[in-house]
Amino acid sequence: MSIPVSLSGVVQGLHHFAWRCRDAEQTRHFYEDILGLPLVHLIRNDHVPSTGEYCPYVHIFFEMANGGYIAFFDLGDDTAAEPSPNTPAWVNHLALRVESSEQLRQMKTHLQINGIEVLGVTDHHIIESIYFFDPNGIRLELTTPTVSAAVMQQHADEAHSQLRAWSAEKRAARAEVA
Image (cartoon, rainbow, N blue to C red):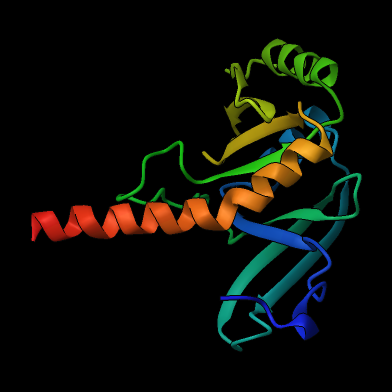
């Protein structure tokens, strides 16, 4: 299935991605003081604007260097979002880009100095990454590209055929089980 030309380029990038947090101040400390993302906006409301539902909350936004945001909702009950019971902990995560392998290693050291357990540096053959959890149990990845734009274009050129092959293999495996 191809995307109609009229929709190509309509989505410009990430504005924000939001999660529930256990404690807004604890979350602020982690994202602002440890990761260096400034707290730039706070919304406090008693009713959800989209539904009208009564639910007092604080919605906080941290700005990334590219103008996107990471946001959190503190619902005032000291409860973090539950992980998905049918999904391994490593699957759902937020990957944030840093400029270089040197910055990645500096961030690993910085996180460890601040008492945060870090996995990696992991070589994914197109990126290097480190992994850790925020105070809400959200898995984060810091990553940096390690290949050229030309190599990434080769991967893009192959992506649809590789997805078709995966889907066919998955259908065949499920048919054998049935």
